[in-house]
Length: 202
Image: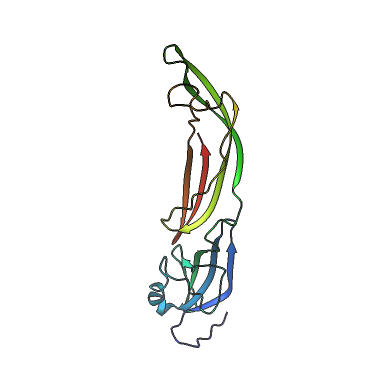
């Protein structure tokens, strides 16, 4: 390949700019650049992790920029030039581009109730079985920022007594005692994290 320098010492984009958009909204951009081998040190300092990706006048669907990640690869050629293979990441949206996945499951809670009157009562152990949904949501966030919390449907009582009407905190069947839990796993792509959060009741 013959390279003609229009500006001596410049960094030139070669080939096509490759843009990939993943279901989560994560954007990956790939481009090979070339410069004189004598200018490698200068351009290496301009292509550091989390620096702006050198797009020039080209555009991408990223809403808040594309940033280099990981460190570019360098390939020194025999013709006096060096290739920089550069990747960068951005995001297409600040909300998930895909519907959360939903999985129905059941869980059991063991509780105790005081039945009868203050003068004559018994302690009754009982079990409630609930049906709930486990939701998994995926979204791309700036590095270190937690994803927005989403509401999921309450569990449905399938077996066992409901709370007693007018429960006074002591006598009768107590309220449901399940809690909403969530776990987030993050995969880093430089200035952005792909966050996968699972919500479930227990």
